[in-house]
Length: 177
Image 1 (cartoon, rainbow, N blue to C red):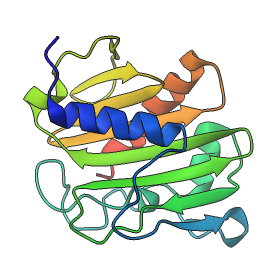
Image 2 (image 1 turned 30 degrees about the vertical axis):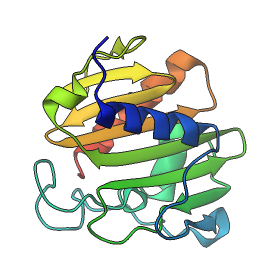
Image 3 (image 1 turned 180 degrees about the vertical axis):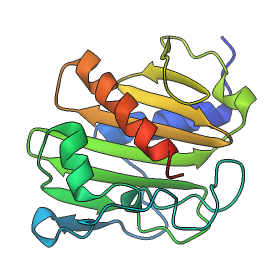
């Protein structure tokens, strides 16, 4: 099995984060509660950073790409807390996590190459209908969009329903990255 270090790092980090185990980010993550509704408005159909960052530019903060209302509509669950990565502009990997009373939505964005993304990983299942390439592994949906790897983890339904929801969420994110 051919496994590149970059893919292993992303898979390991996202799998561990799904279990609530992550390395401490450069700055402490921040959390907001549903009552504040910080993302109540619908984000623009871009990263907010000018042109698409599909092939170059700073990875946007995933918390700014979906409104709280959209997260609720896309997952079918309320939000109890939003965890921001606390990173500054220019970070090569960004995440946002919405805690939900009966589930969770986590989004990770990072730079990759097509060859790293398409490295064969044992247990990965191809997923059609989203991005330039996509696969699921350990409950995560990994989508290639240019040089951006989009990792969507939706938990709270059956495995099949979670991947279906992750696919729809990824489609929304692609239009904004």
